[in-house]
Length: 208
Image 1 (cartoon, rainbow, N blue to C red):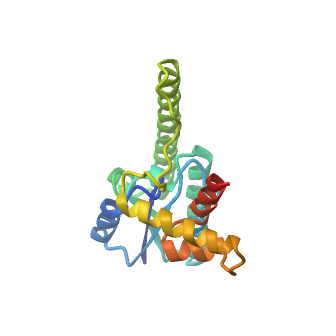
Image 2: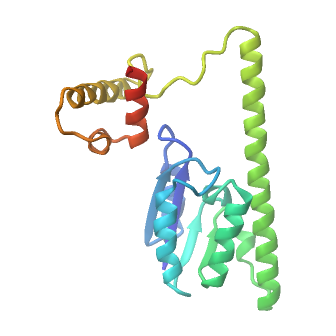
């Protein structure tokens, strides 16, 4: 059974390209996640669904568009690859077809797969560090020029996206109801507006 995993780093990004690629790869099931790839912590989809895959001993293939969708953290990616090997869960990386090449020598195949995936995981982590360093340098330059205003919230009264302005107002209204004693939780607000619980909490904190 082929199971696809698609991930982007934030709710502002979309998964269309990855999902299309996974469907073209004949995945029978696809699970999606919008979380940072700096580690596998606080990523319930990869945690829950990967555990299910491990229980399908020798009968499952995990398919990802690229290795950095799994994780941009070298240790996390290496750990997932090791667990997959131990439980005989195959892995297919769509932008690295060379990982699926077989020589006929199982020991050599295992060695080459482990070597190449670890190299790709290292490259993904290195690229993430470079991106963060470029961001840091850009912020310092902006601060020096008096132009830095911090990260603009995606959901706000003045958000460029009208849909997100509308969602922001709905959340604020529901938070107001909560403050007046109406029994509504952050989780319910998040579910009704299609955002994460953390987004609701962030908006609430900005209102204080």
